Amino acid sequence: MSVEQTLSIIKPDGVEKNLIGEICRRFENAGLQIVAARMMHLSKEQAEGFYEVHKERPFYADLVSYMTSGPVFVQVLEGESAIGKNREIMGATNPADADAGTIRKDFAASIEENVVHGSDGPETAAQEIAFFFGDDGLCPRTR
Image 1 (tube, rainbow, N blue to C red):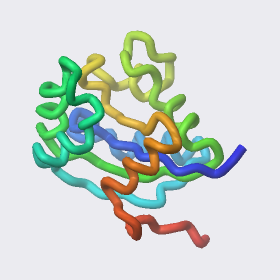
Image 2 (image 1 turned 90 degrees about the vertical axis):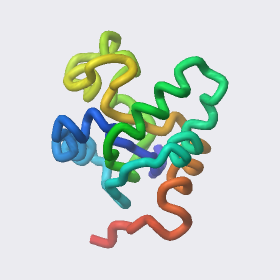
Image 3 (image 1 turned 135 degrees about the vertical axis):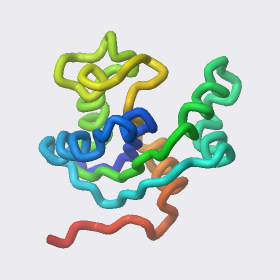
C-alpha cells in the first residue's frame, strides 16, 4: 500500500443538504486526512474545463448545468490507498447500485445528482488536484 492523494467534491446537492460535515467525517473516520479544501461556485467555463473528458457524451450539458447550479466543496484527501478508499466510501455512481452505508446509498437522489465526485485513478487525481489547487494549494499535515 502507498500513501495517495485524491480529489473529492461534494456536489451542489450535497452542499444544499448540509452534508459537508457528515461526508468529511466519513472520510476522516476511514483514515483519510483533508490536506486542502475550499468552497466555491463553479463558473460554466470551470465546469466545462473540469468535465472536458465527457464533452462528447450526451449528459455533458446537463452535468455542467448541475455542477454550476450551486456551491461545491472541493477537497484533497490523503492516506493509504486514498483513491480506492474514497471510491468505496462514496459507493457506486448509481445510488440504486451502491452498497448500504455508502454516501451515495445514504444521500443521493439519482445517478445524475449523486452528492459526491472522486478521482478514478492516480493520473486523474493529479490532474484534478492541479485543476483546483495548483502547485502550492495543499497543506501537508505536520501534526
